Image (tube, rainbow, N blue to C red; front, side, top):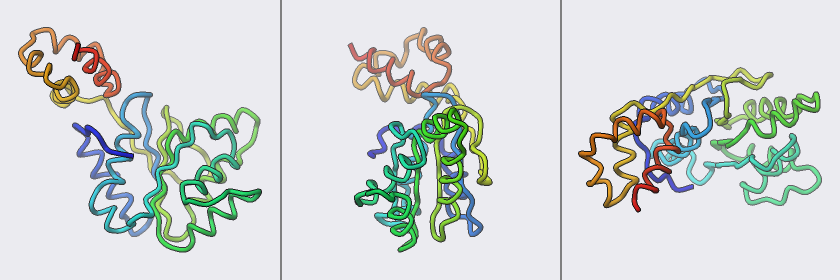
Length: 211
């Protein structure tokens, strides 16, 4: 996906890049509440020149908001690879991933994981672990909340609320031409404080401020 505005996450981005490039790879879990910027951080890593140079067009952003089990995870991954999942999506996806190195970013990974756990199954956790163990694959999963799936040895990256200065820069940038009007507004710090440093909330408020 396009990157759009990316403000105030350079330290998190450098940590994520370091883990992606590590000679001893391990799956990375990007954690935090809804709207904190987990997906944006992952997309920023996908766009980074070092990652682009290493993985080329095998940088996969896999949306899992509609997946409810391990078959849904594998099918979504197969489709992102440009393949027809068929009746054995896991075999299709793993065969394609073994062909060359790839960076796999699973977005909203909590959706199939939590749905699977509700049935008493660990199949989604096992699918994540299987992906992480594939030679040449670097796995990053964004999950709403603060819990890690089992089986795989995840490296957790907790995304914090934006500090005041980046939050202000994000608001003013998203507000467009009207941003200049708000730059000296004495009530802006109070507004940003009420938005708790959540980038999604800040951008929505800034879009409303355009009018």
